Length: 160
View 1 (spheres, one colour):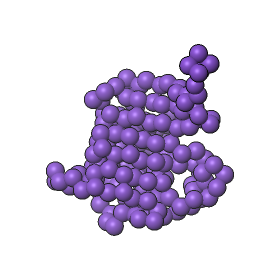
View 2 (spheres, one colour; view 1 turned 60 degrees about the horizontal axis):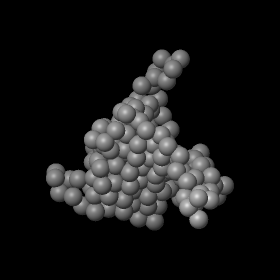
View 3 (cartoon, helix red, strand yellow; view 1 turned 90 degrees about the vertical axis):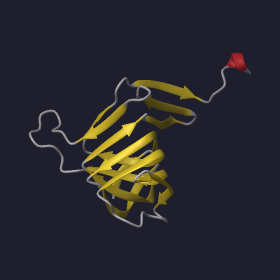
View 4 (cartoon, rainbow, N blue to C red; view 1 turned 180 degrees about the vertical axis):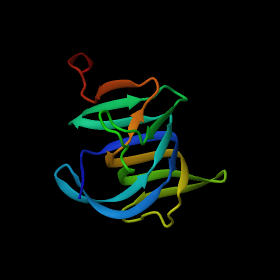
């Protein structure tokens, strides 16, 4: 079973996945419950206009955003103190929704455990993509111009 624990969402104007392999539907732990997710492996990721959000407590979200127009990457590099990189990046996904960019033709997709991808292609790009995940294992994430903020949907006493 995949680790996970909390759901986090990635939004991007473009997501490219190299060496992609759809492993299948697997169990993952989310908020103490076992759910079905899509498991992918990839050798590298390029994420244009990255914005990641995760709820850290009820009504409070952690938001990480890359500099507008930049490309964030997840690469297989050795971790500090290790000589060899991890073999692959593992991604455990609740939902992948966006446009599959196939030779410039944009095909709307909405992949979930109930509706997994029909094909396994080694290199794929999505545009206007939203990916809901439970876990990402392996690789080093680089976010150009990263801005990290805490957002609360709680209304302050002055705004009431």
